[in-house]
Length: 416
Image 1 (cartoon, rainbow, N blue to C red):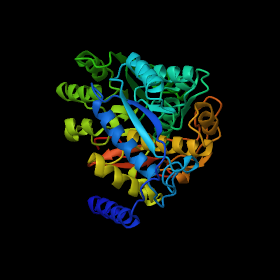
Image 2: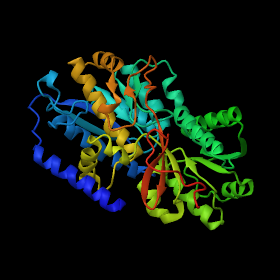
Image 3: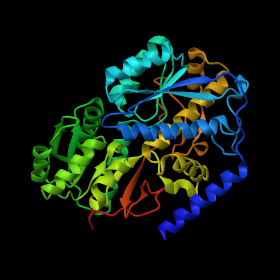
């Protein structure tokens, strides 16, 4: 039944897109936007998927589609004579210092008017400081460390939730399970030794204490470690009721494979997305993660309420050969939000784009996300980016929390 539903949804989207006949953008000077992602190295697939997502967004901006999304209905930037958006990609290879130098190159040599990046929070931390120095807006599409928006930067913006917001939703879900009579007393923290992992663990440690959960395991590991045997043995011995991992794709694959080798099957996993939302993980570990729960900014099943999701997903699938996910949906929206600001600024000057971003007020219904709206506070953070929790069962993600948007009941414990 699920397969039929998806085929019907995407087939209808394809027919709608074909009937519209997207118009080419009016000729004009390119609006150059820098894009910094890992296009090589351990997270290369994330970068490849990000490129597909941003190129899909550029197609929406540069053509005309009757979608109720920012910058979708006009061809190019109308305020600049229909000028098309041109994406200039840079590969930071997962290295913060490479990210810093690539940001500077994009600004000084390629003359970009804004930058979008960068998946790894550690790279967004350095690249955004460079953008600040040159007065160029930096829009963090998916980097989620809370500290990024606490540095008093004027040119930094983030439309998506940060890890404190995500973690609060995760613990709200655990509280709801306890109220339903589930035995949820302890959690296990498992996190990499970067800004992403340490910020996430600090928040989860605090929330566990505030809400009365025992931290049965608190394990920090070296990112891109060749072995996680010792760490998994610690997890197995501690046997927390819920494992809360914060890892990128390569480490997530190694973690799951090591758990299988050592015969450790957590009762429940509630992940901080990142590697646990990526298709390569599920390709590598098969059904071993059936029942996994992840925090998310996006779920395909919202297409029943927001028709633009089906259309955009169909466009993305044609490029990437896969569905939008937690990362690519945020990357797609980042460019539309930036294009909307450039339209309102009527300029490619960094300061004017920055002021337009600060004045952004987009209703959630005009996005493909479950957000209330897009509106930035003085730190550049959108506090209305409501997270959801999704569960992976039988090869399909379903929204399970909060109840107001849930389409399925959670499977708890995950292997039940």
